[in-house]
Length: 308
Ligand SMILES: [Zn+2]
Image 1 (cartoon, rainbow, N blue to C red):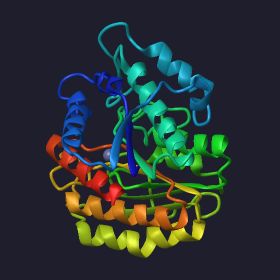
Image 2: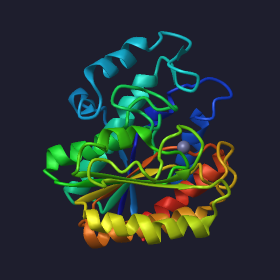
Image 3: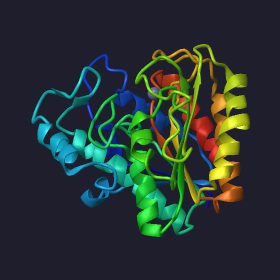
């Protein structure tokens, strides 16, 4: 079997209120589009709740308690201007993190070649001590540390093509020479990090900030010339993708000019890398993407890039 789609319908429950871009409709639409895509090469798998101790691989006790204790019984609790808790937020977040860990299990026991986790809330802005930017817990970083712990992998890499810089993942990986984080993102927008000179403790962080208006050509060149060669140098045992589709030309939150074909291209590139150098160990996690139509079409292009 080629590709597992690991998620849980509870990930839809996290409610951010009306007019919030990180809406329940996002995942409803992705599920619908992916379910309509009939392929013998994909299989849907339900993600379980995460084991609490695995959240601790990335987040402090204080952060975990702070989130859990602030969940309201009704209405909303605003962590900051963008980041909201509603009564079912923990249910969604625990299934999101559990799905990523389940995907790691499926890949590391060679039941599948790779996996996509269409989950929410997203994760790459969540820092060890702080929820921010729609993110409560860092799903992808937890998956990477879980893979190291459970399957004794030495080195893991996260490649992040969301249009925003994954400050949370970078912060967690910064001091750990066995973790690699590489990001393409639009310069000068939220969260304001991801400069070229942010390189981590051992050149294990690669930031490629790109100008507004960036199209497929420049995006692809960044992977060909910078990210893939550095990834090769790092030589990971497994790769993770922070798959944000808000670099799409129709996305309302940023100004890249990417298309579904560009997301297919980068997925294919990373899948090829994992096939060749990482024993086909690849897990991808959904991050951003706020034009519903562009998000679902891009997610489908992503899955098509994984199953090839
Ligand atoms: Zn984003």
